[in-house]
Each structure stands twice: as structure tokens, then as C-alpha cells.
Figure (spheres, rainbow, N blue to C red):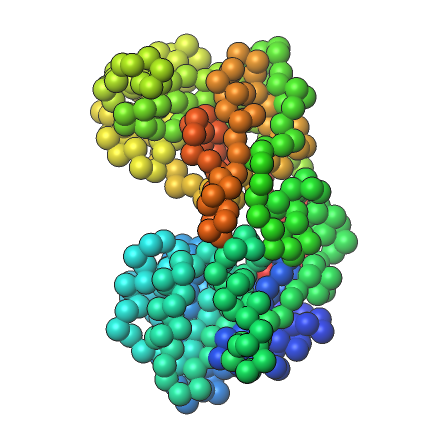
Length: 428
């Protein structure tokens, strides 16, 4: 029987071992492929550093507190317990206490988050996924680590080659030669806990020529160019309706525009043992730009209710309004005709694009021929070249509404390869 409270270290590879013993610069960056062992060795090194340091105030930084809890805090607490170190996690104050140390937890993934740490002083920091930290936030972190002998430990996957972390630190030869910054490059081969089967499955998760394969598997800093869903073709379009009871789930995904386009898709989800498949059964919505008519939230929700009734959906189904559709969500709850559950979804745009692109590539995500606006949207969905030159990865925001409406049903009913196909311990 597994002991869920124990952390079982496995032997580190040469790169991780070197990081563990030689990360003594001001800024220590572990960069490379996903699942290459960066997080675990960085956590191990951070624990060792905090126990030996004369400082007692530290930080752990992530994109949000929820991602930090999942990716870092859980293994961190298990490590401390396995080492026989009594630790307390105060979830109200977002602090961890052990051996006279206080480790403050912060999410610094969006503009303005740097204000959370402004005015504080720390003696060391661990940054999880450095490329998702805002530039203002990163500079604030550096300025707050002002106690003697402070060190900063960073993990990240490659991102846009114009990203500030890549240009100003990872490629900064002056800082590296002066001993103020050091960089370690990790590959999948550096993680000795990965089975060949898992590596094969991981590589198969991304189209070989895609942005995400080049970054997450090959460990390259490349930018998104051209079509986002370049593998979407006629094979992803189906023509014959399936019985509705064929699907395990029927869900509404949506995108909301207060004065432009509000749209939705009905997506049927079929769960198989080793993967899930998704059919975009139908679409709906209102485009104020093309019709010249603005509808109220109440009128649009009546359209939703009509399509809900058409497919005989109810409390066993969910409508996902976009995270910023506050008034629309309120009207969905208020309208007595809406029988479906209503659940807000907060997207991670790049993660969603990676997952949907993989599903199109494997032909696990298909669109019915009747959904002509959705098909046109997918085919015209492109990377924003101007944003890429600024080091930002994002889609070109023109007629992208139906692409956005696909996200929630897929991501909320996503087959988790790691949970379902992987046995044993894997280092992150």
C-alpha cells in the first residue's frame, strides 16, 4: 500500500545532480523539456538552501496560488515531512513555517500582481514556471531578495524567443560570465523516473512539427507563426449524426461579447479507456457586428434555452459561460427556462490551444458539417505576429469566438494521461 504522505526520491541524473550542488549564483535557472525533473531538483535544492541559510524569510512564486498548490506546495510539504521536518501550511496567510523559517506563497502571473510583494524583504526565492511570471513581477522579485547571500531558483519551460527571461537572463553572457546567473538545460533523458512507454505517450501528445512539440519535447525557444490549428482538415469534419445517448457527456461551451459576438457550441464527449473523443454537434449565437442588432443578455439566454430544449438537455448537462461574462452568467442563473448547470470557466489560453491542437491532430476532436461558423473560425485562427515580436504568445483576436467556445467542455472533461496511463513516481 502506498504511503501518500511520504516522498520517495529517486537517483538524479547528471544535469540535476550538477544543479543540486552547483546552483550557487544569485539567479539559478533550470530550463528545458516538460517532465524533465526540473521541479523536484529545484525544490530539493531550495529546501537545502533554506535550512543552511542565515536568512529566515523566503518566497515561493507561481502563476497563481492554485497552480502553486498543485505543482509545488504538495510535493514540498511531503519532502519536508519525509525529511523529518515539522512544517505548517497556513492556507489563510499563504505561508509555510518550518525550522524557524517563513516561506510566503504568491501568485504573480498577471499585471498588478507585483504589488503583492512590494515593500517586503526576503532572503531567497523559488520561482515555478518563470516564463508565466510578468516582467514587472519578476523585477519586483529580484528587488525584494535583498538580504545577504540571497539566491533565486527558477524552473521554466521554453517559451517565445523574445521573452524577457530568455533575452535578459538566459542569454545574458555578461551575467553568466560574472557569475550572477547560471543556466542548466534539462531534457526528457535527464529524468530517470520516466518509463519508455510514458516518454512515447508524452511525445505523441503533440504534433511533431507543432509549436508545443518544439518547446515542450525538444526544449526549443520558438515563436508561434501562421495557422494555430494547422492540422485541422476535412478528416476533422463529420457528416452523420450520432444518437445523443452515445455520448457520456453533452455540454455547452461559450464565448461572450457584450456588444459583439456571443456564441456557443454543443459538444458531445465519449470516454474510452485510453482517450476521450469530442464531437462539436451544433453551434449557436448572435453576431451584433454582422446583424447590426444588439441583443440583451435576456434575449440571448432565451436563444440558449431554445437550443437546450431542442436537444432535451437538463440538470445532467453544463453550460460554461466565459470567465468575464458576469452579466450573462447572472442571466443564465436567473432564467427559469435554463435547466442546465451553469459553471464559469477560467481558461489558460496556451494550454487550451495545445490540448485542442493535439486532439485535432489525432482526430479525437471533430466538428459536424452544420457548424459552418465554427469550421471557418478554426481554419482562420492564427498567431498574432505583432505580439510574438514583443515576446507574447497569443492568437490574433479577430473572429476567434467559436474557437474560444470549444475550450471549457474539452478542458473540463480532459483525459489525464498522467493519472490514467502512468504508474509509479514521476519527477516533474
